[in-house]
Image: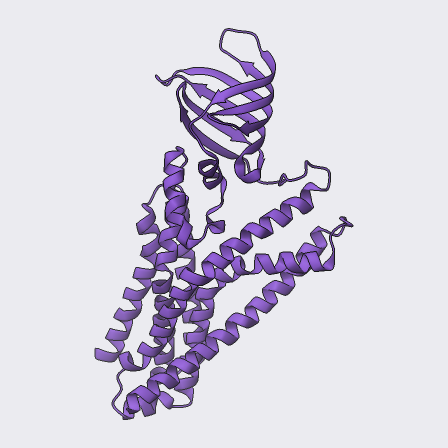
Amino acid sequence: MIGRILGFYFARRFAHAVAVIFLSCVTLIVLVDFLEMARRTADRDQVTVSLLALLTLYRAPAFTEQLLPFAVLFGGMVTFVILSRRLELVVARAVGLSVWQFITPPVLVAFLVGVFATCVFNPISADFKERANQIEGDIFASGGGTPGFTQGKKEFWIRQQSVDGQSIIQAQSSRQGGRVLSGVVIFEFDPAGNFMERVEAKSATLGDGAWILTGAKVLVPGLDLASYDTYMIATKLDPKQVQDSLIAPETVSFWQLPSAIRSAEQSGFGAEKYRLQLQSLLAKPFLLVAMVLIAAVVGLRVFRFGGVGQTILGGVLAGFLLYVGTKLAEDLGEAGIVHPVAAAWFPAVTGILLGALILLHREDG
């Protein structure tokens, strides 16, 4: 009974510390982002304060998803340090609790928070991120670009198969869920893989079994450049496949990622970024557990050896290195150098194993 009461107490203290740190950082991020968006849109009279507030609200969840592991780390550090400084861990040991018993409640809380972040918060964040992209596109396109087009975005590529062979499509921007492309360049190859022609067009609209190009210029090896008001390129893509291929992984809900992976594979577009996003979300609860174990290492060291400042700095450094390792693994996974499963799970598994080994060494010799 005493152990259960202490477990609930430790869990409550940990959850409170994480919530305070998380909400404080979110408030600061939202304020800074609002001021930055106000600066960027200062020359656009149609942008109102309410629109900026709505845009900031839509952008906030995507930022806070990246913040959550650090909130868990620092919340755990604060919790264990305070418990150590107040000698509450001494009381826990006096009633017969081991280190594993009083870190289990924070570990369970962190794991449940990770499950909630993956299954509930991520779909909300993805939906809000997509809405923010649409609002940004309308705001910055209205400064002289074509309505509905997002200016300043990185160009994208689509690889497709058709009855005529393979085509590689490069476009500067898109609208209507990828069904209309702007600034199009297409490289066509026959079924044997031989280059056939290069096509440039002002725009391309996805029709029934073909891309309909407007203002096209066609260059065939050995022939003069030809111009066409309308030109057609065969395709097997449907609107959903094109849309899924053009959507950024962070705007795809956790529950929609499996279908996005299948659509990307069918369209010939690389699905590594969606696989990596899926595996990263699945690994998030375990990454938060790793952060708690790192925080526990810091707290126990304060309890036994003193040196609060040095041990907190060590915990911060360990969390920072784990975060850098996570981002590096993600970059390698997106580039196809490392398998997405390994890239997503390696940081979490490594953090858990290292934290557990250090605790075992300190507590059990």
